[in-house]
Length: 282
Picture (spheres, rainbow, N blue to C red):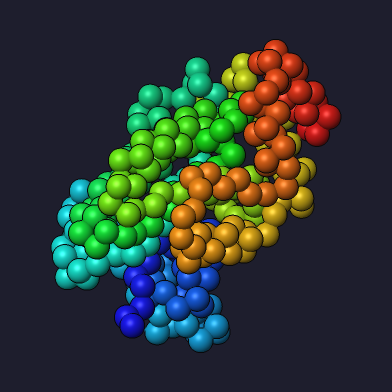
């Protein structure tokens, strides 16, 4: 039998890199996509160490570039089939809503939402023809719970959640499965180089300066408790291999509990818990 083909976006670092390796270890032929092939060094080096280099192919893809997406569609025509796609490409936009330029919200949605949609639309005809396929969208606890100072990222992940619900209902009759993986805080670069603060909140003359410093301190203080990102890679690979997967998969320390309480508590009680948490951990 031919190897199943899995496409992973945003594969140069973080979850994408680990997911690509884990799928390759499990025998998938992995198309690891990234904005620049020059950033593939770490992935290829680790693939050599694990002996799975033959299961990896690097492909340039910038999910916000129509030219790059056009080349990707031609590549898919030559490929002929797709069994799994993991929509992982993204970054975390931060800052306070009053100060963030609307253009930054557009940029955040271009990558985290519209890029994900474009890649999914490109692979769906092949999955529909095959009458099988799996679309795994990397969401976040931020797709279920809002947090101050992260409105671009939170809004984008909420959008991914709603769109994925609709998509799952639309493509299920064609044998295509859709799953959302909702990680909490993990040791990836999403909260360092992957976090992009816009607006004036890091400037002393901003009315939100002290609040932003408190949030930054909160993130830094809790960093040693962040989970091992390999756990997320293992979860995604498990889903890629399984049949009949549920839609949502929260993962990480305390994630299921926080989502549960957010759903059952009155908003004023939930709000007080968030405020208390910020005061005690900052």
